[in-house]
Image (cartoon, rainbow, N blue to C red; front, side, top):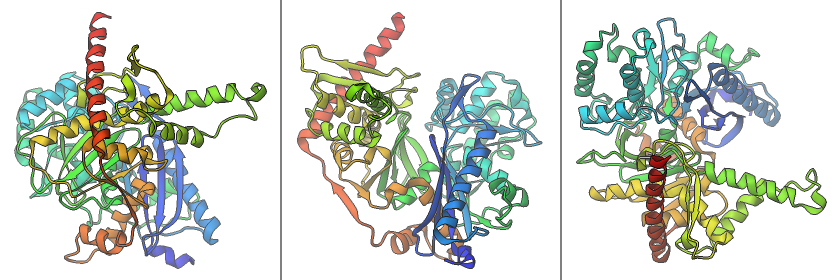
Amino acid sequence: MNRTEFGNTCMGIEFGSTNIKAVLIGENNEVLASGSHRWVSHVEDGYFSYTLDEIREGLRDAYHNLKEDVKNRYGVVLKTIGCIGISAMMHGYIALDDKDQLLVPFRTWQNTTTETAARELSELFAFNIPERWSIAHLYQAILNQEPHVGSVAKITTLAGYVHYMLTGKHVLGIGDASGMFPVDDTTLYYEQKKLERFREKIASYGYAWEIMEILPAVLPAGEEAGLLSEEGAGLLDPEGDLTAGIRFCPPEGDAGTGMTATNAVRVNTGNVSAGTSIFSMIVLEKPLKDYYREIDMVATPVGKPVAMVHCNNCTNDMNAWAAVLSEFLETAGPGNDTASNAPDPGRVYETIYRKAAEGDFDCGGTVICNYIAGEPVTGMATGFPLVHRDPEKEFKLANLCRAFLYSAMTSLKIGMDVLKNEDIRIDRLIGHGGLFKNGTVALEFLASALRTQVCAMDTAEVGGPYGMALLAKYCLQKRAGDTLEAFLDEQVFGNVQITKCEPSEEAAAGIDAYTENFKALLERIRGWRKTC
């Protein structure tokens, strides 16, 4: 490619829990270059958080690494891009004053500190408000009488904040906005009646701001959401090569980019994203008849209603076990020469998955609570990682490994089982994310757990940043009448290879038995806590 051809490219940058990834795609939606930056949350003032310096540094580093990849591959310095999109972990709470100063440390989706607010708002709206939603964080701060609330001028998500830094526009894509406050699938904006109920609910506190004034404006996919400012260009590329004026599409949440990256935005399709957290997104023909604590109602990037089951815990506990097993192998190496016998982490995971396939269907009485953090779907306020085994049954590696994978998806199964109360059809369910690496083992387990076909695409591993780049591409070339669904079907995924896994009745029965043991273990944990 030459320098001028990069004006037709699109870039997605996604802030995940452990990685910030940037992907640049070309005219045929192929990945041209990528870059990433590792980071990890910390606890600040009792909340899981990332600092603003970490956000800025990670943004610059991920872009710099992509820029270097472009230079190494094509021999040119990246100076322009057709359209850029920012995505990030949904939900959470970033509160700014009228000078755009952060009022309290960023509170991420991982925090389970808003139980009272979430319960009261759910009752007020007759609509499930999860603990991680932005409105729950704001209302909990009000209930706590936190001094900063009176100075709030804007609240937003991580994607919205980064977009604001780069463009000066206080906006969100409708998918991400639907994790801040309930949205209306007909008006494609926040639900007016619920806004009014919230205003009445907090009227006695006497704040100078109105809720509509501080929430970001809502935009569906395909709309232009601002241009890269001079300040934004300097922030993104301190070397000064990137030009200002580049178009931006609406910033989105990682749920929306996952749906896009797996072509799961049509009605009756869905996807399961599984990494640090695990969540399913099922696109509905119409909103649910009732509301459930386990089910979030959110939206696709174009505003269609989505039933979402979001679980805070997925692979983190298994990752910790993999690290311990790696340390064991390293320590037990020939002659204890640890410097030369460090095992390949990839082989450790390959072994876990291979042995898991050999385990008993019900894990032989071995059950793992994988909760590093609290889990609202099952009503667990804090983490409590634990391995429990039946002393009357054989404890073996294959069952332990199978329990690692089962525990990563059991909370999702518990939430998805609630949807059996509704008349919902799922034509296709796509799995993507770190849990589904190492062959089809985890896909097969999930298919049996949910008793439905689960598929994987050969493009799904690029994940959220690729989905965000596709949303930028849709914004760049959208014509009147074009739909996101048709764009993805016809221009992106027409020739993608799909791996399909069907449920096994034996495995499904085993996972059902494991799930009952899992629930019983949670009850024991609750009992232990009461006596401590």
